[in-house]
Image 1 (cartoon, rainbow, N blue to C red):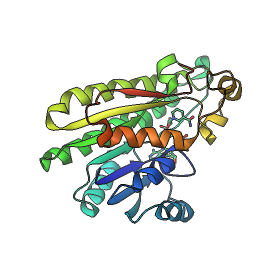
Image 2: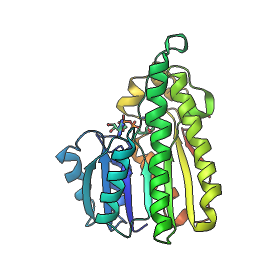
Image 3: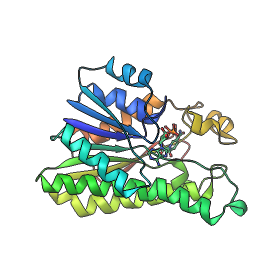
Image 4: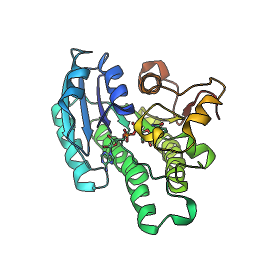
Length: 242
Ligand SMILES: NC(=O)c1ccc[n+]([C@@H]2O[C@H](COP(=O)([O-])OP(=O)(O)OC[C@H]3O[C@@H](n4cnc5c(N)ncnc54)[C@H](O)[C@@H]3O)[C@@H](O)[C@H]2O)c1
């Protein structure tokens, strides 16, 4: 990839690990989150690369905010051809306690947000007559239905697998690849907040939690030229649990 936009780089998380890894090979990296990105995070990414780093805020639940981010990103890096959609929220509410409002919030950020960032990105690639590559963040829960991490969370992540396939089919002939990563129990705040994570990780075939860097490597692979004949795929990064 030449230049890449990554959402969800808000703390020491999967988006941050992806940014650090992708920065090694990128010309410009635009990183964005709903919260202002901490200076220490930006400095840590800069420490890995000579790539230009542009830090922005975005609320992927807002069409206007997505539009603004994409305009800023393509202005800063007209050659932009990579997108990683890491922004997401979790909500471990048990099935019978999920409200319609909580359902809508989850779907708005995780599914609608992922789709509309991708839609705006693809439109801008097409306007420039260029191909590109997108990686979306699904989840092991999207494969299994989840258990302690929220049925609505799992449903949103199953939706991400579907929109990944749909976009791959729609725009493959334009040279745009779209893939997803489905992480399992990764050593992050998000996973530590889910009941039973430690047992599940220890009882997995690899017998341990995954790291953010292991997910970042997989994202970089799917995004980059090594995966040039891969599209519509969802790659499991779950230590063999599923
Ligand atoms: N951590 C895991 O074990 C795990 C497992 C499976 C899937 N995932 C998925 O990977 C992605 C990253 O997870 P993570 O562990 O790094 O979680 P995280 O909570 O650290 O990262 C998500 C980021 O998205 C940002 N965000 C939330 N709402 C937003 C909005 N409306 N607009 C823009 N940004 C917003 C947050 O501020 C945060 O920085 C998520 O999509 C998550 O569902 C994580």
